[in-house]
Length: 355
Image 1 (spheres, rainbow, N blue to C red):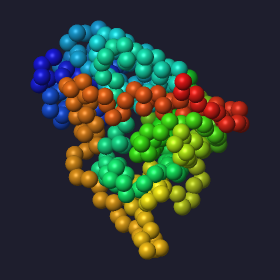
Image 2 (tube, rainbow, N blue to C red):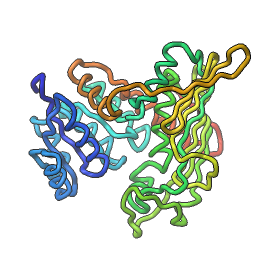
Image 3 (cartoon, one colour):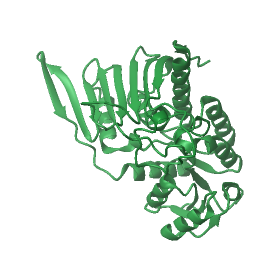
């Protein structure tokens, strides 16, 4: 690998893999050196579209190739752990799509292998890089908010079940429904903005009121009407953190949710002020002379969130830096998701031990 050229392979030629190809083609110092997919014709199509020279007939063939320095893994959740571990063993740096793994046990195996390998393992959570998220982080870092003691985050979709009957809606392949799909984004961003406190207990409930009846079908993914649906379509949880703060999380793929915008939202309430995101809008609120004062938060200028995230991946490889979206952050997210599912199953609180 030369200082000016990281040879990057993309594992997964589907929708999210295509997004990564489009993005990394705009990032200086990256050569898109290969693409792999179990459906080779699609990999060939992507290679032609993005000017990628080599098509691999399997992810394993790519990972064994010494000509590849780093990989992006954008495949169904059940394959994240095995491919990430193999990539690290083969000496590749890894940008891994969310969630880290299908469950926290699998995520832990990735964390352990990343520590042994000395290679960069970075989670792909682009929402941390939006201009609005960065502006909120600036307010928080400047002390405008004080101690964040309560947070509410979520993402309600009224009719957005993806790929009914495909891997999206099969727990053995996905790990879950909207909680592990879009909820993990809101969970990750919330914890990051709150300063990465550790979760200590979780109470949650999940529901499947639309998917089993083949209702609430969205436009993402390709349905397989010969498949099945055994995941949730709505989840609600309360997470207690080791600094005394609480985080409530609510997400849905399908719901009768009036007056709730179908956009991601985060409300962070602190001792000195509060910041919030609803879709592409941000607010800062505080009390001045016993009056409530609200001001718009202007997104920080800069390039596209995925460009910034991808550049950070390159920077971490070049400089041996710990990614902002580290392996530990991915594992923490998985621990919380598992606890929510377990709490829903048992009906009780789940405590998390970090010893």
